[in-house]
Length: 154
Image 1 (cartoon, one colour):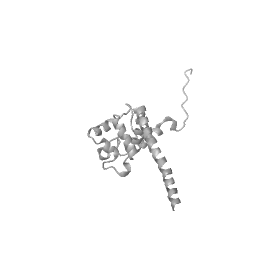
Image 2 (cartoon, rainbow, N blue to C red):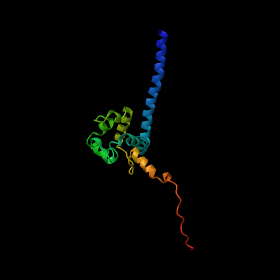
Image 3 (cartoon, helix red, strand yellow):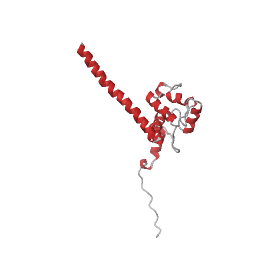
Image 4 (tube, rainbow, N blue to C red):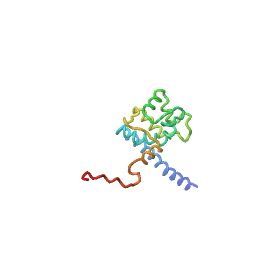
């Protein structure tokens, strides 16, 4: 009986330590990313999250709850109303599947505290938009015979 308690304590400590260290490492990585460059912070964490988790329902075509999250101007409008942090934290009528995890919501809070850095020409496109752009890229076009230019010599 005593041996099984000792084993369970060791196992739980073996599990707890990596979890705590991982959480600590992620929070430190987020802070380091934010202090290095606000634009890099936006490009590596904020933009991908907005594109993958928000723009489908809160982008140019569709604005559920009259909320648009694909431009800095739209976010500033929400911020002026005092509802940006609750909106990003999912403390609105957003479905459970759309709410950000606590760690990611804390990262967005940090971004808000930084003043919502957003590179001047940056846009947030959803996955469908990126796929359409990729399909139009020259590298993904079918190979075809080019037209032979006419000779100027005659």
